[in-house]
Image (cartoon, rainbow, N blue to C red; front, side, top):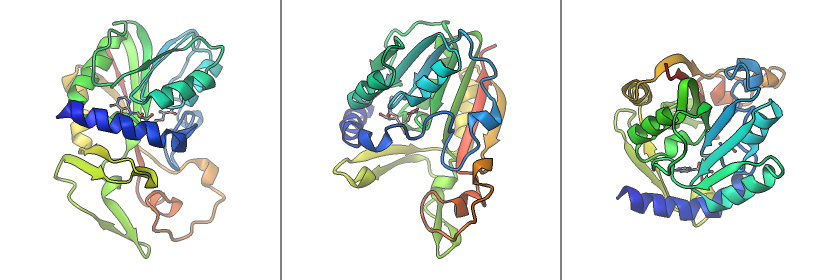
Length: 251
Ligand SMILES: C[S@@+](CC[C@H](N)C(=O)[O-])C[C@H]1O[C@@H](n2cnc3c(N)ncnc32)[C@H](O)[C@@H]1O
């Protein structure tokens, strides 16, 4: 079942990848969200070995290189994204793998200073296995940072400026989109509660250092808010966090 979903999601990601070239990439942690320049979660990247889970077009890894990282590794389900990442990271000697984050593909264990994931972790069909793998990749003392849609945000719909709850936050499972990004690209996305992410990190033996429910980046301070019913809007983001960001350590 999981393999079937991953196979179909991979096909669809190859179709929609072009919508995500350079989108959802560091220093951004997510839509309207404070950036790495504001939050400073990575502290020091000089000579650090880095692994990006769901590396997409490679723009976050490029940011890591600009900040002094010495090794750039990335995993992504989509071949098309991996090819774009190779272009983005030309001359930087990246190690890129087209594979599902849920699977052990023999990446080095106890090796990385940082493993991170920007708007990709929620795609995993097996959160428990993914967190355990990430834990195994990190050196003792290493750090895992990820951002994803705030789990409640996905249920908040705006109608004529009023925010209403859609569906049930209680029911975890999957949602199927027949036409992701308006393309003939059916996609299955898991839905989880905030506590599930936190509890799975604890089960994988991580120590949680910080949980951030995003605020709006200061770059939007001078922008006047207009009422909007869009899924991501400044209007909605001023009332509720779009993004959750979690920083956790391997002791
Ligand atoms: C919104 S993009 C992430 C952008 C990326 N973090 C960046 O810095 O540019 C989500 C990515 O997750 C990847 N993805 C989806 N499901 C995945 C899975 N099960 N394993 C690995 N990657 C996956 C997609 O192919 C896509 O590139």
